[in-house]
Amino acid sequence: MSTVAWITARGLFGRRRVLLLLPLPLLLVGLALLCRAYDVNPTEWGPPVLVGLGLAVLLPVISLIVGTGVLGSEVDDGTIVHILTKPLPRRDIIVAKLGVAIGVGAVTSAVPLFVAGLLADSARLGLGLAVAAVVGACAYSAFFLLLSLLTKRPVLAGLVYILVWEGLLGRFVSGTRVLSIEQYVITIADKIAPTALLDARVSPTVSIVMAAIFVVGCAVAAVDRLRSFSMAGETS
Image 1 (cartoon, helix red, strand yellow):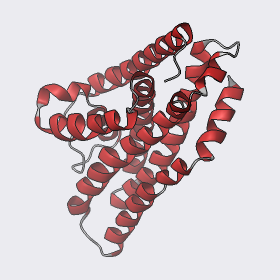
Image 2: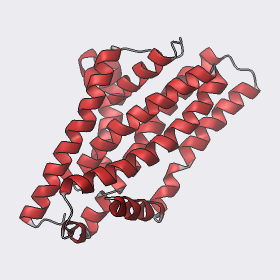
Image 3: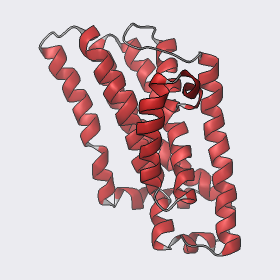
């Protein structure tokens, strides 16, 4: 399993796709530094930067890039056959690749969010945002990894989820928030560091339970889907 993780990480950082991970974190920290330098009131720039850019864009988009990249490219070019011919349990393959996706997504998202939270309010808010980013990276990565096995266009499907379900329905239709990872993340951050800069609309219990369901459910479904690839001899 460690070998699969190493190959996955090497392949991920060896592609141009990894360059897509840099602009959003730099933009987030840059905007926070700029607002802090000009003494802009955090109540004016905190919500649009921390939530609108950080939790609603940076976190899911980075998780989408990484989550669909750790396995999706191998499905597209057919090299997944080489993985499936190895004497490895499908569970170990999914766990290794999901671990890499979560690790990269969590670090790339949590660090800039911590810095932005620190600049906006305090180290406690930065910590809350960082912890929430780790939880979000786990849920998003598992979901997007599953999408890479279910559809030939996982990035498009992931963008539809981020922009339509979370960005539109999740904010204005209360019934959809229970299936919005963004709402879980906001609630967790607000629970750790209560602040007027965050607007939690889902209970902490629902957020934690549903985030866990996303991770476990999507991972189990991904293992089952990978087994079907092996049985049916699919390569795409």
